[in-house]
Image (tube, rainbow, N blue to C red):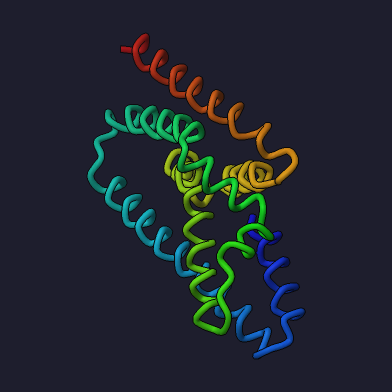
Length: 179
C-alpha cells in the first residue's frame, strides 16, 4: 500500500543529485519496515497469547470487539489524519523533508507511523480471519490499498466502517439468539 510513497521518494532522491540515492532510499525503506516489524511482533505475540489462554466461549466476544473497534476506528480523527498524509505523498515530503541518511530514516519512521495509523485496526482483523489465510489477507490488502488512493479512497473508508460495525452487530445478534 506504500508503493506510491516509495515511488515518489525514489524519484525525489534521484532528482536531488546529492549523496547516494540508493542508500537514502534503503534508509527510508528500512525505517518504514521497522515500524511494521514492531507491530507484527506485537500482533503475533497477541495472537499466540490469545490462542493459548482465550476460552472458546470468549472467542465470539473477541470477534465482536475487534469488528466493532476496527469499524469505529474508520471514523476517528487519527485515522483521517494518517490517511490524509498517506494519500498525498508529495505533501508529506514537502512538509517533512530531511536531508541525508538520518533524514531519510526519520522520514521512513514518520511515514511508517502514518501507515500504521491507517491500517493497524484493519490488520487486527487477521485475528478473526487468520493471518495465514491468503484470501483474507489479500482482501485486507486490497481494501487498505483502495482506502489510500487519493481520488477514490474517501469513498472506501466510511462504507468499510459501516460494514464492520454492521458485521459486529450481526455477530452480536447471532451470539445473543444462539444463547
